[in-house]
Image (tube, rainbow, N blue to C red; front, side):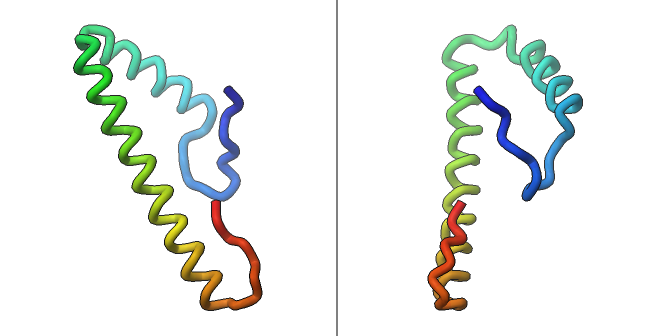
Length: 73
C-alpha cells in the first residue's frame, strides 16, 4: 500500500509514523482478536466521519463558488 501524501494535511513525518506503528503493534499485541477488531472498527468509523465532514465542506464550497470546481477529496 502506498502512503497517502501529507501535502494538504497535517500529520506525522514518515519516521514518526513508523515509530507510532511499531509502538501500536506492541501495545495491541496482548489484545484478543475481538478487542483488536473493535479498536479497528473505531478507527475506521473515525476515518469515515472525517471524510464525510470533508465531503460536506467541499460540497458547500462548490455551491458557494458556483464555478463547477470539484473540491471533493
